[in-house]
Amino acid sequence: MAKIDLTKYGITGTTEIVYNPSYETLFEEETKPELEGFEKGKVSELGAVNVMTGIYTGRSPKDKYIVMDENSKDTVWWTSDEYKNDNHPATQEAWNAVKDLAKKELSNKKLFVVDAFCGANKDTRMAIRFIVEVAWQAHFVTNMFIQPTAEELENFEPDFVVYNASKAKVENYKELGLNSETAVMFNITSREQVIVNTWYGGEMKKGMFSMMNYYLPLKGIASMHCSANTDLNGENTAIFFGLSGTGKTTLSTDPKRLLIGDDEHGWDDNGVFNFEGGCYAKVINLDKESEPDIYNAIKRNALLENVTLDAEGKIDFADKSVTENTRVSYPINHIKNIVRPVSSAPAAKEVIFLSADAFGVLPPVSVLTPEQTQYYFLSGFTAKLAGTERGITEPTPTFSACFGQAFLELHPTKYAEELVKRMEKSGAKAYLVNTGWNGTGKRISIKDTRGIIDAILDGSILKAPTKKIPFFNFEVPTELPGVDPAILDPRDTYADAAEWETKAKDLAARFVKNFAKYEGNAAGKALVAAGPQA
Ligand SMILES: Nc1ncnc2c1ncn2[C@@H]1O[C@H](COP(=O)(O)OP(=O)(O)OP(=O)(O)O)[C@@H](O)[C@H]1O
Ligand SMILES: O=C([O-])CC(=O)C(=O)O
Ligand SMILES: [Mn+2]
Image (cartoon, rainbow, N blue to C red; front, side):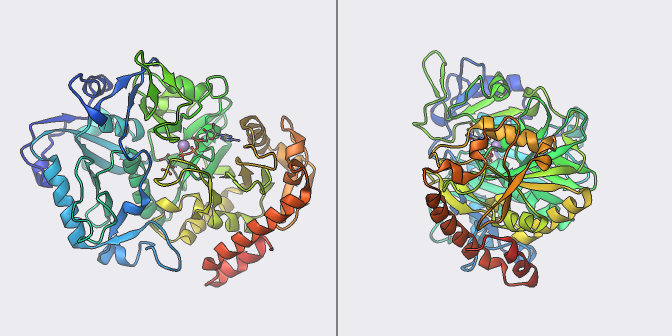
């Protein structure tokens, strides 16, 4: 085992280091009877431990900062008045102060240190050291990142260090030019992340994803907020882009196929590879019958978050009193059909954009032209669903570039460029799938969406009869096996098609307005014709 010296990080007086704990140790540590408050884990009827993550039950994008220095100044896609995003600049002084706070918080106590990888490809993976004081946070990163072998651990040299000081607060945040007592800060030069005053594990997961999104495209590798799976022969790979809650995890967990990963992937010359070693599924209203694989993954070693248990440990999946963003993390091997031993597969042939349209305008599936592919990827239209981000309590329409704007560290066009390059090489086709609402006022059923996905993956969609949808010029199939034909043209789901038309015009205008920010150069301008015409 590697000898861990934390004093080189400025963490002193450490009384004990629990290094890369086994699942047995994690269970023991997170359920210790003397634990209190948000540190305390409770064993559920399914064997998985449940924890409460405190005030923060989702990410806090307003508190995300990156140190602006010589390295980052001209590479990072900073927030601006013309194009607001979550990459807020921080000064070196603010970084020093927040890091000092973390060092102080983490000194003189027992700590958990977890060394793990982000990225299944050995040439481009990041070796990360997580330093945390809460046992279940160590469990979370053990589930979500790629666990090194004993041999890899011998020689583990971190490329990146994460300091999780969730119990501290940035009291002088105003002085430091920050947003609140909470800070999620990155230093691209020193390769460190500091987390203060939020316990939400997703900040570590999505934090490292953001860093992969910085480093990989600069090496010519696509870095994508998508799930991925492949057929049983490991040949026909599909990727599913989508913002939180649009169905990446649900739809990629398909018993007929092998899962590569449910949220973050790269695409290089060898194909598509997972960044993670686990999955992070929403469990609100989780139904054993319709989502058996996810349900069955909730067992010992999985970690539930913010779920309601009764005194006997019985789970109430319908309870959203704490948050609608109730979650479970589990190592990917809790799913039976996965690509082994390495989560990777050849280049994707199908690229699916999942959009949960709260307006009820988009067809449940549209076959995109190459120009539409770029236009809709850059637009990233969807709804933010309740809970994943602080302050979002109902489906809120949004344009999230590349279906993951919150995690992009470079300009969106860079991600589009890398994706298009890969798609052209593999001859991949793209589809826009609405997993949100239609004229019935209800969300399109998972059953219909699964039928649509099946038709995309087996190619039958390309043989189906089609029609064109006005304003958007979408080509949509009029019949697909296993899918209710009455939903394929969204106009048919309205009592009066004129109602759809009014909403469609409004949505088309929103697209046009949003896309204006890409029209500053010839490439962006050229794509306008592929977008909706208001
Ligand atoms: N037609 C549909 N297709 C997919 N999911 C649906 C559909 N209708 C309802 N849902 C529900 O929407 C949610 C989709 O969540 P899922 O965890 O798959 O999203 P995700 O894209 O993986 O999000 P995240 O990035 O937060 O992990 C699930 O709770 C699922 O039951
Ligand atoms: O980390 C996750 O899976 C949830 C997510 O996409 C987000 O934080 O927006
Ligand atoms: Mn997911």
